[in-house]
Length: 139
Image (cartoon, rainbow, N blue to C red; front, side, top):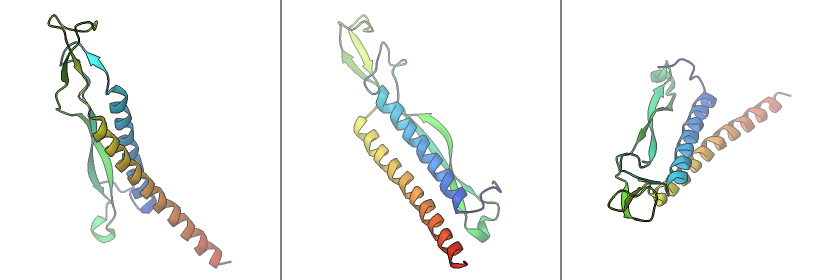
């Protein structure tokens, strides 16, 4: 538990940071999707962030919680074995291994992460606007 989660700005900031990590892993996966290796062990495998809920010190009273990236893990999807005897990385049987990345899945992940990021940005923007209205009411 961390005591520095005290308001909606903290919650939104951490959530945006988590979604940015998610977008970065998607970018890495997409950029490596067409990579080829000489063995299944060398082939690129997609990476995914693992999230965990973090509660504020007084979460029972305030209800404040947010999300953090606990770790980034490699998926267990197997690379695709492709026959390409002319490729310089081909083994003695003429096979290479393509990255274990599903580009369509990554695109869906990218859309979801960007929407979540945008939602949190809207929360911050709305809150700032309401705070400015409150300040202006006192004038």
